[in-house]
Image (cartoon, rainbow, N blue to C red; front, side):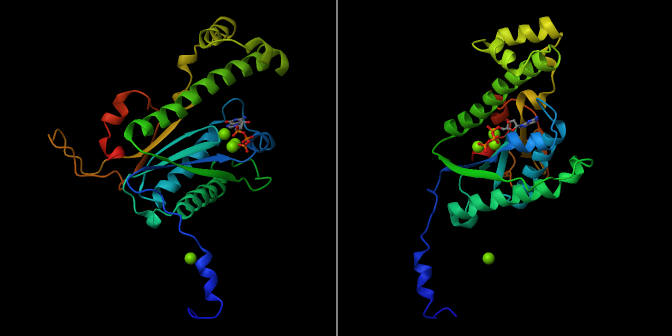
Length: 257
Ligand code: DGT
Ligand code: MG
Ligand code: MG
Ligand code: MG
Ligand code: MG
């Protein structure tokens, strides 16, 4: 029916290509997860099940879209990095964004019972998404450093806040007041001095977030040349490691190639 008299409407569909040779980052965030986590009884400040489910859903995105080479998640959000020269959907923004968004959402709902066997979903969760283009390696590294620094700041605050409320019997208002204007060191001191908690011993998942990459395949041990591998095949692994320092990136040069 290509030439029906209606087909002209197609010309209203405008192209939306993303600039070539730039890094595409897509960030998803749970819509009103303040309410969603409340209704579903997530543990505060961190619910292992909820974070594990987000990781599982992000793994689903990487399994279905091989050009996604790196993902970083914390709280109700996940960021996905595509290969610099990806030709996925001819780099059409709406196609890339909507696919990542719907794959993650579908996996989140599909795998819900594996992570929350006792809790029935009360209503369908949803996410929003945006795509940001970055021109160079430095900006990409700084983007992921920014998200991981955010993880750390939020987690230190939330951990201290909930210790004051749950163990210190402060009201939320009083806990807020107590923490207002405090710097990192003071929060560490409250945790350690009053609750005997050494922040640095808390699980890495809470402090560093989740980093998903693929394990190199056929990596020749001790070979002088880096393996001719582009990060798009093989098994996805979930790590809780530092992405701010050089080491993570130096060990995985394919991420930014
Ligand atoms: P939005 O993103 O503007 O639609 O609104 P929210 O409510 O999703 O706000 P956002 O994304 O800034 O904050 C994430 C919320 O999700 C925040 O209220 C805390 C909650 N949340 C995330 N992870 C956990 C968790 O592991 N346990 C609990 N109890 N809450 C969590
Ligand atoms: Mg949001
Ligand atoms: Mg949210
Ligand atoms: Mg959020
Ligand atoms: Mg179709």
